[in-house]
Length: 82
Image 1: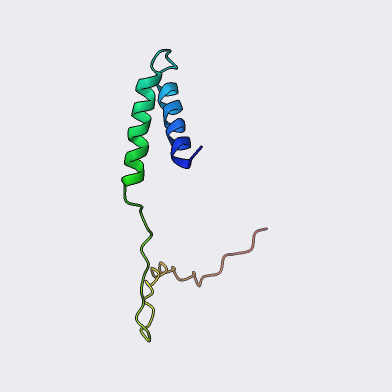
Image 2 (image 1 turned 180 degrees about the horizontal axis):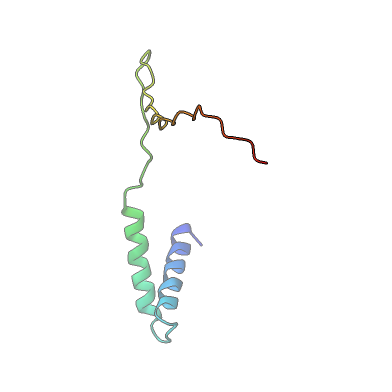
């Protein structure tokens, strides 16, 4: 069994299940599955984009957000607790 035939079989099974497993619809499910597999095979494959850095060019790094300014500590001393 070829990879394409396996994919058609998987699609037909998924269609059959999604319709509540009806009887007597095999030829319709197989035809739908064949069309889905054909469309899947013809669809362009998504390839990840590669970032090309120019030789000798510095890497561009996004700077981190600056930390929030802290309040200065109070300089007054608190009396000891008795």
